[in-house]
Length: 396
Ligand SMILES: *Cc1c(COP(=O)(O)O)cnc(C)c1O
Image (cartoon, rainbow, N blue to C red):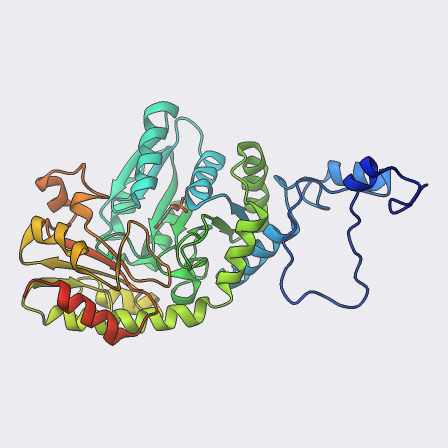
C-alpha cells in the first residue's frame, strides 16, 4: 500500500489525508479534542466487530467519541455511578431519559417545582404522546404512595429547585419511589456531585445541565446523564443514539476543563452565597431571603441531612415588589442581569418578569415566588465587591 505521506501522491490526495501523529510513550496532559465524526480502521474484521458492538470501539461520534467518553467517565466517577451518557444539553439529557424510559400510557410523578424546561417537556409529552404526568408538592414522602397508579413508572425529582431553592427530603422520597418500584430520576444540576450524590441515596438516574456548574464558565451548552447500573445505561444509550442529542467533542472538552475546578468553584461560591444571604437579610429593602444554609429557610433541617453545603443560589424578596424587582438589574455593576446561572460570574434575574412571566399573581404565589423576588446565582468574585455592588443597587 502506498503510504499516505508518499511524495508520489498528487496534491489533491495529500491535502485530504493528513496523517494523525502517533505518540509513543508521551501522553497528553489534557484530554485531546477528538474533533472527528468518524473512525478509520486498518483491519476490516475490526470494523465489522465494532459495527456489531457499537458500545465497544469508537466508530461514529453520535455513538461515542473519546473526548465525550472522557466526560462521561469523569461525571460518572464524581456521582458514584456505573457509567454516563453525554448529551448536547441538559434538555437533551432529560428528553432522552424520558423518551428512552417511558411509553404512552405510562404515568410519571414529578416534583411540582421542576425546572421550567422540564415542566414544558413533561406537559408536551402528556399532550402529544399519551404519557400521564402527576405532580407532588415534595412536603411529605407519603405523597408518592398516595399518588401511585397502576401505570406509574417514574419519579422525577430535583436536589435544589429553581428559583426558591426548595430542598425536598431526597433520601426519603427516593426510598418511597424505590419501594414502589419506580425508576427514580434526579436533576442534580444545582447541587452538583460535590454537595449531593443522589445515587448514594438510591437514585437510578442522575441528570445534569452541565451548562451550569459542571462547565461553570458560561461558555458551553452541555448535558450528562449518570446511571446507577450499567444495564440501564445501555438501554438509554441505545435510544440516545436514535434520538441524536449527542454531545459535541469540543463542548465535552470545555465541560471537562470546567470540571477540573468544580470543587474550588463550588466551595468559593457557597461561601460567597452565605455572606451575601446574611447581609441581604439585614438590609431594609429586603423582605426575606431564601438560602438553604440559613436557619430561617423552611427546608434548612432537611438540607443539612443530605447536602454537604447549601449551594450558590440565593433568592430574595424586595419590599418594593414587582417594579423594584424589575429595576434592580439596572443598578448592578458587577453582577450581571442574565437568565442562566452556575458560572463564575454572579448573575441575577427577576423571575416574575422573565422565566415565570406566564404566571399571574395567584400562580406565582402558589409557586412561592414573590412579585419582587430576585434569583441570585453567586459567582467566585470577592464577596465584599459583590456586597458593595448589591448594596449600591438596592433601594436606599
Ligand atoms: C438549565 C437547566 C436545565 C436545562 O439545561 P440546558 O443545558 O439549558 O438544556 C435543566 N435542569 C436544570 C435544573 C437547569 O438549571
